[in-house]
Length: 124
Picture 1 (cartoon, one colour):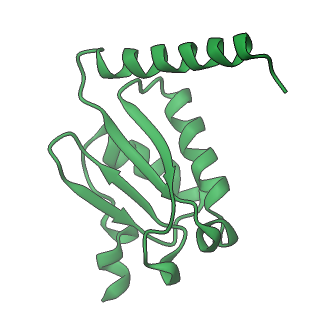
Picture 2 (cartoon, one colour):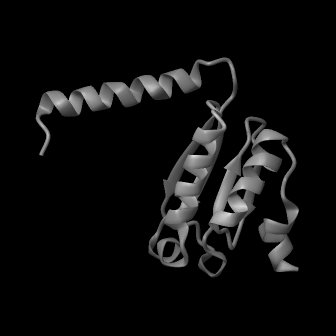
């Protein structure tokens, strides 16, 4: 167990990181990966890790990758939702590590939704 001082230092470091992201002049894009039991069982953890690595490798300071619980569409897991600064949300389904780079490049960097990975494409 870490000491209280160490935990407070970690907290301060993370708060500063969040503040940098929210004050850097760019609006934040949020990538949310469903990490409930069904998502984890379907492979959501490697998907989240791939997003974190891709965002870090590309130095995308305006992108925040987080996890959430059940999104409610278990049969489509792993599920990733991308929230753009304009308020739009895109739901990607049946995600895997190999699809992450394309979503980051096309959608997050170039603002073009990767239609073939969306829930709409799978429901047809």
